[in-house]
Length: 506
Image: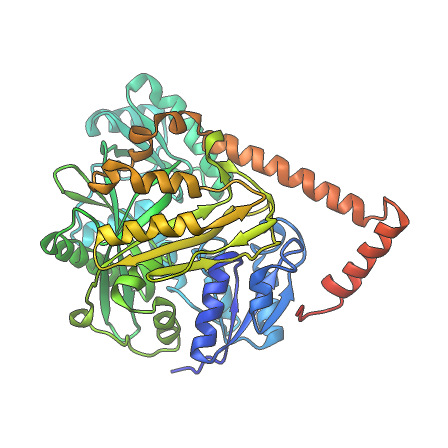
């Protein structure tokens, strides 16, 4: 076993704060890293130490592996926690950590590579005996082969990126005449998002539920699951509201899905926290979707109903210790719901709403948890995901969890940017949601006007990139000395004292 005394968190926002708190609870020194726009961010202030990465965009800062490793070596961190997103599922980064004798808190590079490739993951799932939707066994090489595969599988089909996730590189195809264009668009988007143009064809399951199983595994051969999360309410294939347990999963189905999740974990040699995702059809048949080789955004709902601190378990497993719980000891109690509070303009199609939060007040009270990355007076930067916080409520049953969520959403105050709070309050009062009638088409079915206004993912990415580039240009224009003398003096002080001169910010 290795004693971990200091952990570098290679992330930002609410997940960085969550891990920093986990370090504090464990008596471990926490180290934050930050880009230029994040130099006064909450996660920087919360950590024991903070080091600059420089640069504004993710590509200039949080995604630069060598910078992260350099800081870890400089500060003497024994381990790096990647959080989610950024480098969390990057096999080359995990390998780079190993080469530099730094513990990567997550699976091995080999497992990340195996399960991160959807085609390889499907083959692993087949070996483990998991149920899968019909799909092509290889990436698309030519249109004639693709047409033959689609005809065999049966329309509608789904074009999916082999290295994808988050809905990128994904297209639904209803008929043969739309297949070629969908393949080209999906491949182009996959190349842009993942640097990998491979796409394949899978049977499209109409009106499914998205249900996932949380797993934990150690280096001693112990693998457990911690029940399911219902993640069906999504916009552009991105989750908005999650809950545990699922309204439709009974003990028998939970056991079957849990056994399947554990089986693929064992087959792949999995270590650490992970999530096995499934689609569940209207007759409660479930099909393997993918494995996320990291801590999920929605992990708090599992923590709330099981009482198990997943971050603490990650620390222990990374240090070579055994899991502190057995499968028999995992018990679900009550019901938990999570609303992701995004800085988004829902009426305009869930587009990001960045800017200054003039006022910010989080709810509290019985059964309420808020995992936030911001405080009042902070700015929501244009460069990153617009997630402000995760609001979680717990109740002795689903009804109480919903009532507490409505109260918490009513108490939540954010001024200066648009948020998803009003929309999530509408969902809590929606009869289909109250009755547990959910699917990944929930927003389209229950709020068709909102669904119709959503910008396609590729257009949203292009708009965000243009906005970020403009803001970055203006910032560099100002720092270059163009402007009045007073402004130049202030910028020089910031550069010498806040960005370059000091390693520890606060």
